[in-house]
Structures are given as C-alpha cells and as structure tokens.
Amino acid sequence: MKKFILLLLLINYSCSNDDEIKNSSIDDTPVNLSESISIYDEDNFLSGFTLYTPTVSNKSFLINMEGHPVKEWVSEHKGLVSYLDKNGNLYRVFDTKNSNFNSGGSMGGIEMFDFEGNLVWQWIYSDDHKILHHDIALLPNGNILASVWEKKTKNEAIEAGRDPSLLTENEMWPDKVIEIKILGNNEAEIVWEWTVWDHLIQDYDDEKSFFGNIENHPELVNINHTLGEANFNHINSIDYVEEFDQIILSSRKFNEFWVIDHSTTTIEAKGHTGGNFNKGGDLLFRYGNPYAYKSGDENNQTLFAQHDVTWLGNKQNHGGNFLVFNNAFSPTMSSVDEIKIPQNSDGSYPTANASLGSIVWSYQNADIYSPRVSGARRLENGNTLITQGTSGLIYEIDINKTLVWKYKIPLAGNQTFKAFRYPSNYNAFNNKNLEKDDSITIE
Image (cartoon, rainbow, N blue to C red; front, side, top):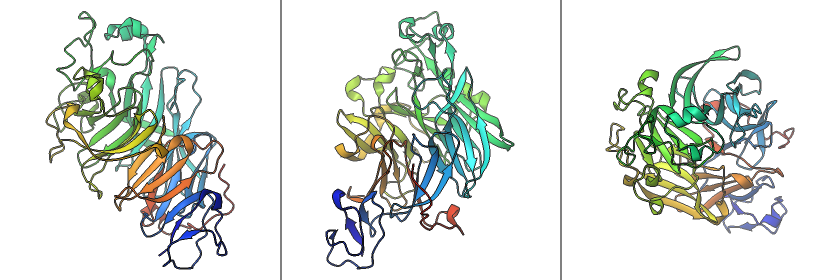
C-alpha cells in the first residue's frame, strides 16, 4: 500500500526523504509526486487523469494522479471550462472580450481541439445583443448545449412586467439555452432553444404581460425576484440527464437549480404543453429557494450562490440524486450537498415546488470556502471530486468524507471554474501516450 499525507513544508518527495509521514506497511517503491500534491492515498482515490482550465491561462491541462502534466491544449484565448469527450476531443469555452456583456462568466465562443492539440473547430456566438457564457454540456448525439445571455431593452422589460425601479442598468439579460450542431468550417447550426423569457410571471402590473399569482405557479420565473442587475438569472452550469432527456440549470441569482424538458421542439419549448412531460418549456422542478416564487421566506432557502449542479444518475452513493457546490452555505464556509428530490421512475416530478427536496449528504468545511466559481463531481467509485475554485485547490474525498487526494494548481493566479477526473479506462485515453511530459509548463 502506498499512502502519503505530505506536510506543506515538506512536499518535495524523493526516495531518500526521511521526513514523510507514512504507514508502517508502506511499499518502499518511490512515487514521484509533484510539489502540488499534499495528500496522496493510492488505495482510496479514483485512479485517472484530472482536467482543469485556469481562468487566467490560455491553456487547459491534463494531469496524472502524481500531479504531473501529461497533456496540454493551447488556445489563442483565455478560457473558463473544458470537457474531454470519449473520442479524445477537447471542447473549450473561451473569452471573446465582448464589452457589451461585462459580467463574470461572459465568454462568447466554443472551440474544439483533437487530442494532439490541433484546433479543429471554433465558433463564436457573441455580438451586441447576445453572448455565450459560463458552461456547456456535451450531448450523446455530438451536439452541444450552451448557456446564452440575450439582451432585452428597458421597454421590453417593462412590457414584460419588470418593476422600473429594478432596471438600474436599463436592460435585462434573460438566460437562454441553445443546442448547437457542429457543421465544420467553423460553422454551426442551432437546432433547439429554450429561453426563460417565455416562462415568466409577475404580480407588479396587471396591465403588462405575464401577470399572475406567483406562489401558485412555481413552474414560472418571477421577473421581479432579483434586484437591479441586468444579469438577473445568472445560469452558471448546465447538466444533461440522458435517461430522461432533461436539462439541469443552476441559477446563481435565484439560489436555485431548475429542471427543464429537452424532449420538446423549439416551438413547444416556448409554451406550456408538449414534450415527454407535457409541460412545454415550463420548469419541471426547482430546488433551493422557495422565496423565489413567494412560497415561504428567506429562512427556507437551502442553496446560496451555488455552482455545478449535476444529476448523479446510477453512480455509487447515491444514484438518482443531485449534487451541488453550495458556495455561501455560511459566511465562511461552503458545502457540497447531495439532494434527494421526489422524482418518479419516468423522470417526472409530482410538482415543481422546491420544498419537496431534502439534503441527504453534506460535506461542510471552511477549507473549501469559495464565494464564487467552484464545483463538485461524484466519481465512479463513490468518491467526490471538489474544486475550490478561488484558490485553485482540487480535493478528492471518500464516502466517509476523508481526504484521499489534494492538489494545488501551481499558478500565482490559479482560480479555476471547475475540474474533472476521467478514469484511467476512459475511452479517450485508448492508445494514447499519457506519460509525464516534462516539456509542459503550467502557466
């Protein structure tokens, strides 16, 4: 058994180092650990490769369990997040520097590299009126889901029932989800879309659109819930549930995650009927903050500026629930929460009401506190990979909440949106050279 818990002041490991803390039954075979590794429990972590994209860098990195880079992808642009598909292609969200959308997470483009680092495809969706932001999700059919801000004027917002006193920026950026089909030659086709603007409700002005009783309609989104920022939803993550053809959206400003139906046509997604669940584009379920639809008060809130909501599917510990990085669980502490909601076997929900969910597992620790960015992923062995984004720390904990692996990104500005662990047998790695590459500098 090799198990190392390395003191931060003694992280330069070598075979002759007598100051390491080790178990008496340790195999003496040396492990060449990077200085960025401070916890390394080989018997209990999920062996594989970790992918991350520092927000200050134009590179994405793949590292081994010893913390050494084995692969890098170099872009002309700074990025936010990257995903590796089963064919070995890297999809990267990058910054087009669109000053019309000056908010955290504003990006504008997606690019695809092959495993060798060659740029294969690049697509920009960014102008005066719209921009890609934050996250994407790779679909089984090869398409991509992406979040978009779409600008609405002050007059459009008022006509939709927005309280004019809340229009401090004189515009609104409602969130939209688009499905992109790659066409090649840096082109793409939008084959499906959904926008929150079609599913609003307000009780401010009965002479404007979307007027109704907010508490009675949790399937709709209150246009006046958030304060004056144009970015009033702030969707910061997308997850896709293949089994039920559903999309999970994390809304930071509403302190909720939303579930919508992807089986609809684009026309059905604009309305309130159609699709597998006959709800059109209305919210199938929401969780985190009943106050957002005037059901309960702020004391009922359970999510706080959360990120990276994912459906656990059939993974160990516990399938069918949701996992979330709960950034502001307290003023000095973040948590990773597993949430059980009343989902039926066909993927339907008895109601959209958030009060029906409950936290069934939680890891709370001041060491992972991060007021923004960050993420959590349940791994194939039941462990959980946690990204403490503002400090560039990546942790792996087991089911008993014991740290089994810890890595610090070796950059001065090491903020990272979220990281991913791909197991050693992931299809993308078949017949690939994944040896430590000393020519790669993490910068």
